[in-house]
Amino acid sequence: MASNYVSTAEAADRLGVSQRQIRNMIVHGQLEVLANVHNHLISIDSLLRTCQIPRRAGRAWSQRIAWAALVILGGGNAAWLQPSERYRLRQSLKTRSVDEVMAAARDRATVRKFRATPDAISRLREYVAATGETALQDADIAAVFGLARGGSILDGYVPTGVADEMAESFHMEKDPNGNVILREVDFEDALSVEVPIAAIALDLAESLAAREHSAGRSVLEKLLQEQLRG
Image (cartoon, rainbow, N blue to C red; front, side, top):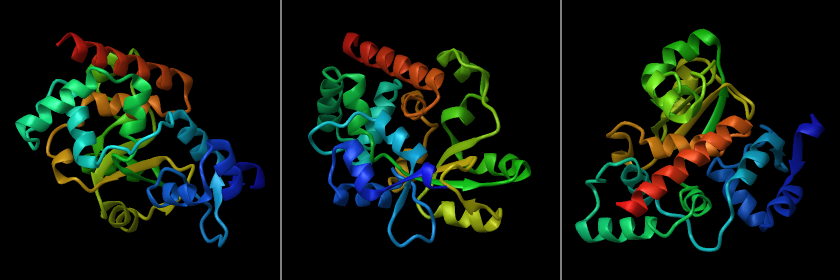
């Protein structure tokens, strides 16, 4: 077990941040910890995934702005923004790189991970807004990324508070290496439309799997180039 986890101090050293920032990342689901341990032991896998997200100076976008940016990159309008906000965000996106978008949108959701049976995963599918590997079960989306259709992992967005309800209803256990990834979102309008292709790309870009990581970044780059041309 020890080889699969590191201390808070080790995680802070690897990411080049303070231990206070590490604790904040744990609260927001960006880092996963071993349950029932007083002094946090952080999952190596979650640490490596976090290392995929470029660290940049400046604040992350709020969920309201992060989801507006992802909708706009996907060709949508983000109707909850005022026209002046929408204009400024579009202009900002024209100047941003993939790394900058990944860094700015890092707080778009709180990630929760669980372990579930294959039967539970099949039944859970209808209650989440699919992203990442699960979104690839749609042949059209898989074609956009040039990847094979999704496998046995469930990855999706849900409203804040729903993850624990699902865990109880479907008898799932918390597991930092689990096969169910539930991304809780506070901003209600984010889930009022289909998951934008930019959000799926972002989630794939944060994957530890090399092909998914590369495909996600590639699609994000194309979307940013389209925004620049537009």
